[in-house]
Amino acid sequence: MNERLKRNFNNFHKAFENLQIATDKAKTDLEIDGTIKRFELCYELSWKLIKEALSDVGIICKNPRDCFKQAFINSLIKDEKNWLMMIDDRNKLVHTYDFGNSREIFENIKKYYVDLYEWLLKKAGEYND
Image (tube, rainbow, N blue to C red; front, side, top):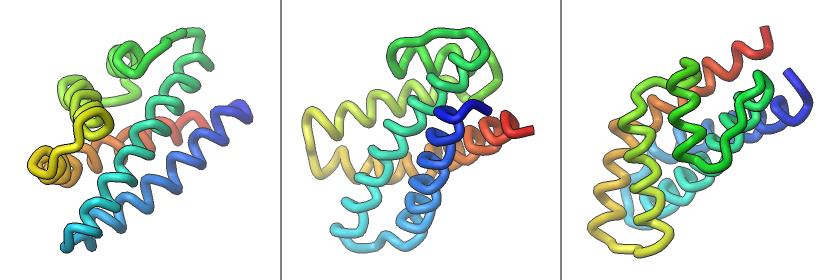
């Protein structure tokens, strides 16, 4: 694993651990909002990790959608459909904050995204072997 990939992996790993804790404990509006912010950070770090992991094997991608598609083709992630849904959810949060949308996205974080991030962490960790 090259140094940049290792740094991206470690940053994502720490952010993901924090997201897991927040997701498990979030009950109040403030805690849910904090969890959503942690999700946004994991989103940014996940696609940078994917971009670097793919680059390490000679695949160049320039944006999250391309990276997620290539990562799925190369078995770095599972469930391409929900990774692409994640892009839409993240964009809804960043561009048009709506309380109702944020609660729906919080449910998606718990139902889909934590599992997807966990899978990515496992697969990216295999680059250490």
